[in-house]
Image (cartoon, rainbow, N blue to C red; front, side, top):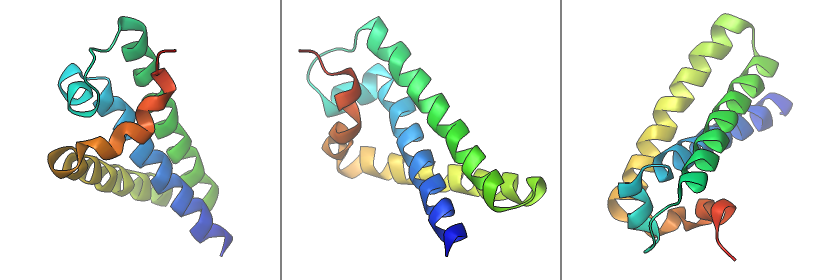
Amino acid sequence: MREAALLAAALAANVAGMGWLALAMETHWTQVRPDAPTRAAVLRLRALGSLDLAAGLALCLRVDHASMAVLVWVMALAGAALAVGLVLTWRPRWLRALAWVVSRP
């Protein structure tokens, strides 16, 4: 049961990481929010996305040995990329939940 929770957390981290990396691109940002992203926002989104993908790898490594964990992580990355791509295609506003980290006052 603990392994399943860690793998679910890894998948969630990968989805969030891919979402933040997608929002770092101006095209995807404008699909979600009407304003243009600032340079600081882009850098913050890239950093958060990279850290979240690394967290997903760390969670996978906690569950299995290295060779299996990397395989599971790569498959989770593929699933997360597909999920974010589909959300950007049909419901881009759903990614507003990830855009709050760079919201302006």
